[in-house]
Image (cartoon, rainbow, N blue to C red; front, side):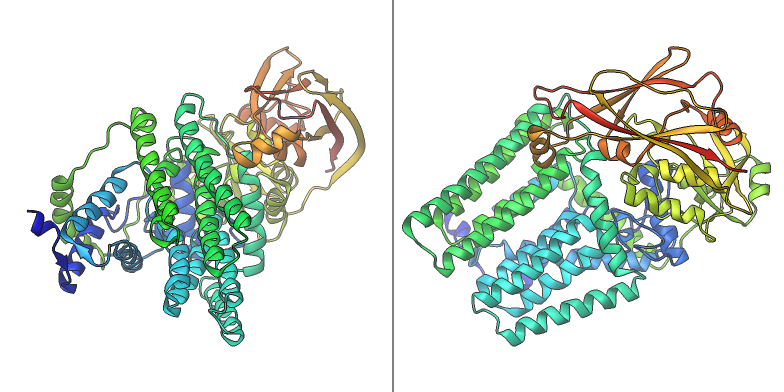
Length: 637
């Protein structure tokens, strides 16, 4: 047995068969495509498909965290053909195979092969994302491998993957593009690339970026600019506090802090020894990449710390830590990599397993299921998409809309698809993502333009317990100007029809006041025909800024008290408040919306006061003083 385990495996066909088997075993997709369904997450997936089907331009007609290639990762085949999804699977297969092969020890012995299989199968058995992060990680891995082996094919691979990532998911993509630029310049300054090659790679990368933008129908400048605003606003708007999961969160942060401490120790030792060699800078480059990947994962996992995101760090951090094991030049950093991997696995067993359940290793059942579905998977490659139809709207509504264009507010784009309506969306396709003035204004411009949809289906639904009409204030103003209510149904939806002219919105008065945190701010009584919009400016203190950058922004609530002394408490965020909040009347349901469109107010729901409170969790994160700008408006006939 000992002799067998120490034998070296040199057979290329055996290695290839082993890698193919492992990739198939680890790959998460059991079907070529999934059937569309309802819900917020399902709706944006459907929207991406319909945007592709209708030829919308990304960055202009549609602005979202996923780019034009993001639809390939979501596997809802409406406009995308099954063959396209198959080609994308092959692309993912090849890149995952490249990673698994790169991590194989060389020379390869039998016992190392077994350990390699066990290690990656255990990682794939944890709960969390897999394919999306691996494509991002592979670009970085291939770039660092280029520095080590100086094979320019690896650099080309890193560049291509970085640009493809940019068109899949923007948060990974911008980091991947930045990495590519830094990598090429670093290779030049360390004399791995000549000036001619530096310019060639930069020019070629830009040309490929522009070519893909043309082929994928992307307004490149607008796509990049809007993506920055999406990323900047995500932290505040989408944060969900992990109330009953803090031990899991703290365990991952402790692991991250151990790594950061080791980085500072390495820098201190090199400065002490005055070691400024290329090897030192290469190691710093690797450490920087591990730090960036780990930080991206920790923010992704714990900004929106729900069950869908929480495990992202503990699952995927294995890969950045493997960079230390395989690509660092110092033996103690290699040992540190294995220590980080061990601590991360222990963290999962102790702190995450009680949340997600025990790890199972269903090798035999996995093989049985995948061998069973393999035939149907290949049969589906050339099959056509099937249109699903689940009519949920009343006949009179559908008859009224006919084949004219329609959008839906706030989020349920799935209803457009299932009711076979002609989709013409605002750029930010769901209200919860229009979380700052730049993004909300894009939707406002769309609804006031000639290309506005003929109808808008309006619902009163909020995300994360926010005040529903506060999520798209500027868009709501545009609806007041451009649309009129026709009919409501099921106490859930209101059909708005586009007017032939835009009603002017007149600003009557602007006043600036100051309020204090946790104290009611009185709302003045308005003249008939007026309504009030307030813009609230809050500021983080020092600790609030630290929390916002390293973990989550401080949490904030808004208490609205109406004229009947009824109080309602909502979660809110500074970005939403700063762009404006219609506050003269409290709007709770569809009848309130209809009344506000028709009269400019809601009877017996005039707002008397509003109060902002911080959800304290040990440290105050906001400055106590609040700046409030009141804007009184009148809608002219």
